[in-house]
Length: 307
Image 1 (tube, rainbow, N blue to C red):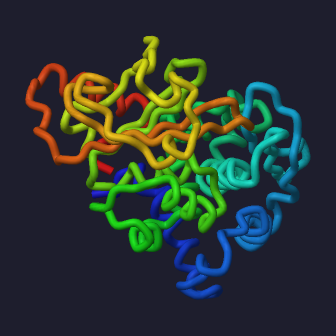
Image 2: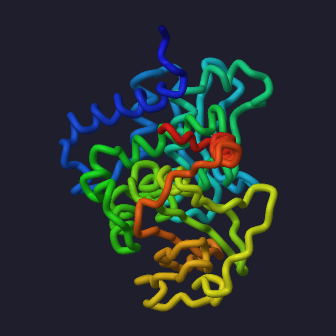
């Protein structure tokens, strides 16, 4: 029986990770994150010397976060572009995402006329990790390459609750944005947690951990407007030290049970990041019809519950 297609990005990322561990040492993250730009250039020259990535450049590509493009001449010469104004951490994941398309999908992109000279990826696919198909595969590859679980779990155990100090330390360790680090943590944590990204008192998007989702704790943002509770830090525009440390919100504020809330403001991207963490394991979601709806919702968003 052939292996599921969705395992390929993880296997390819693991293969490169093992190579980097061998060359740089298993403790390499103690010294520096993955230099993904240099890696993309050098790796492509090694595996496809006639058709490498010849440059990684900043470009104004409105409506997109990044792109993998190729020239008209054959054999193809490739380039990775990232949109102007990205922080170093966000740029790192963007380049990792486009490098994934090169490793996993360049033949498809070149042969399918629908791509028209390359693939252009928007914020939904890269920053929110909310794409499907090859966009989901590129996200899985980039996250596994930049933030391998074997190291990440040692830094923040699966049963541990997180704060912004720990999450920020991880973002720095892996050279990624705080958002990317939180999303990676949510993939494996055994705690019930939710990240909410908001602005002007409304949630733009939200992601739960598997444990939160299975207990019926999630926030709908697709095709609906979710207004933050009035007591939420972001709704009150309270970005003080108290917001970074957090408080226990009473039952009925966010959910029918108490939840610990921390919040910080990103002026650069004009948004707030709120992390909600529940104290207890909570009951498993029992209503079959609603559970199916919840799981289908997140499967459509590229967040498979069995990951």
